[in-house]
Image (tube, rainbow, N blue to C red; front, side):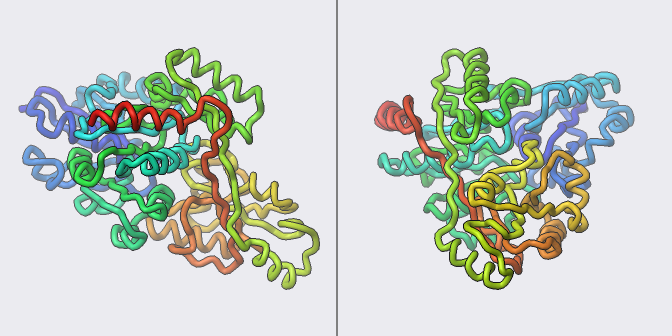
Length: 460
């Protein structure tokens, strides 16, 4: 008989990793269940027996977080492990209070307990909040490593929202691999930009197995973190991105503060979009939390796809609109989904681009939201007059498509990192917006990567 009964609170990511690395082979512990939140449609599943191991011949049930209190009482749970990310410190402690009041212990497992050791050097790129610019920083770092003569492979934070057995170890090299693995919108946003640059991406469920496969192809691993989680793999160089558009979040969200405190380098992104006062406030917070970190300031440079003016010309002829840029046109903006939902932003790079291009009217999609999209706006009332690109499952993606079709827009400005038209039909003309890291001043992130290449790879 196991000495302790445990529940792992999660969101289909770190929770599975904690189970695999700490509890799967522990005879002293019985993991009774996972709870699920944040991601729609991931509860009421089972962590399969094929992945859970011989101690769990029926697998491990995954139940809604709302049932946690009753589960503790009914199953006499001794300990609840908190294992998801991008959540305020206050909310974490409310959850802890629920658990303690119900009679169980409330526990965090940190980096030393859960990080896997790699056989090649690892650079991790994490963030204080979702949407801070971690993905563009990961792309920038991977490009620098390749230009410096290294063979980087990307290992991405997990997003196993489908059939878990099939997703245990996933390798992406071609755009067609996204279709083969039935990648969600959220996965495509993170994977496709790497693939278009010629990088191989690994992801999955069991990160010991994922890492060992990735090491076969790499002399350096880039851990591309998700949400504001800390890495699953022990890094040699830790980079954390902070966002001055959300000044104050770097020390009020879990585990983003962990990332800031651990970082060797803290990247202050979006300096070109933030006020000097906000940038100064973020810098002061970082210096207080981690006085040894090197602080680097960068811009998030927004560009528009080539030939966008020609698309506007055809729209102007049809609508009779006059003016320059987007002036006189009804513009629907689609933004990166997790930045708005988990990340708490009202708008993103798409709205910034629309304003820079002279948009005089943004179409508010909320009155036209269909099905799951209407539910999403109810769940995240802070979201502004923009449409989050979400598609965790097919029905949600179809509701996104229907919402776009119903909105009275002359043009759709898409600011997701991948080509949304690969997975849904948009009848209005589409103009894509891109955002990439651009260096400014000293010290520079490129200098950090150069030193890493010289000091670490030269010895390996």
